[in-house]
Image: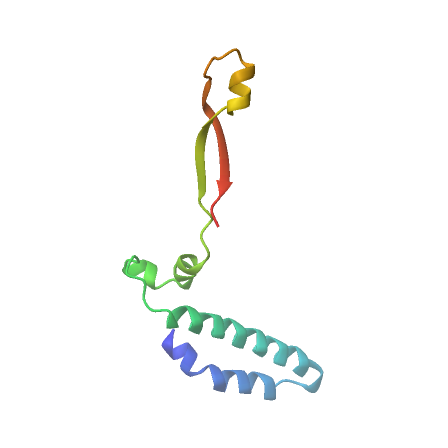
Length: 107
């Protein structure tokens, strides 16, 4: 990967300058796309080597990318009791609803 990045500037220049004028716009567009992908790779690598990756996972940029993606928000759930006014209307019986759950997203 290091060798590819080392030669990136030269290969992009050659690709853009050695193409016919009719195809130059497409070549420049491709070069900009490759440069953007390279910048994303650099930003991931700059965050450091994750200690949770094994040797084979370190070789794959997609594994690094997965570690830096935002995690799915956790959900906090609690069981509830009926309110005091509901208790009074149910003839004094305390009713628990252990399986009814109110879930709120944790932000």
